[in-house]
Length: 387
Image (cartoon, rainbow, N blue to C red):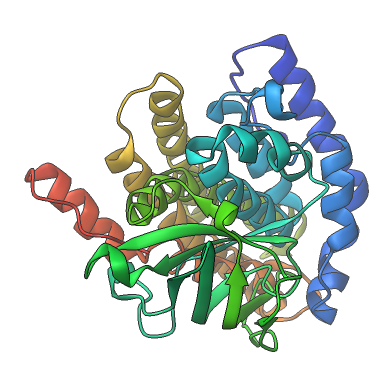
């Protein structure tokens, strides 16, 4: 059922209508088959780029939509309600554009951002490594100064769009900057020695390619450094705060789909002479699902509005990520329960929703990491790096 939204402007209302029209026509009919066949929908991202949906939170001066995060995230949610892999891709792309938009030089913003935020190029974000998922400060992949540029070596893990992206916002240790020195680089797959491993075989979000990226003495031009050398961890953490809001919106969209599916089934399916929705056990379950979805939506919108107002929102972003992804896991599991045996088959999307929800509690910082971040904010302790 359509979500009753409170949007800040008539332009935002038009944008959400456009999003729903595109999502209903181009995403919803294809999601199940692409996920089943593990096909990457590159053409869908091109379509979204042409519609102006790949760069909504970025400035109009660089070709973006100039929209507040409050609006951008609700667009992501609507996309996720039809196809979670695509919505996640939009969120990751936004995350990948963030370093240059926020920390890039004037030349980088002028020369690179228009094609990035316009959706002509698709981005990936490379922070995690196989041995350093939640502990991003422990990463080993490095870039050493080499003449006028750099030479990058090592491997990055769990890269969404790995092997499919046109650019990679990559965080590498720069040894000359001290033991904790990490820098951000804008890498492209045409660089010699840059390669992708075979895609991971995942339990869900199979339309979204995830692969390791291998850097075999990759020569990196000097102008590919983003921000100050040795200050990459600050860039990474700032990006993750906004990225966690993106994941929150994806999780809410997925949970909304599961709720809608469960309600539709409960109204039609009869047992003991009446629709199962009229049995209190099912009715209460649906009510709890609805409460979880709407609470999660409100939580990410609170964080987004703080961001739009220029207020600190790191704690609120972690709360949103924790609440929304836990809600998605519970709501999708309950949707399977409402459908009963039918929910356990692939005749209905309930089982796919459940598989897709699980990873949302893991990426962009596990929910255990979110609890650490929230707790340390509350006790005024130093927040540790989290990846």
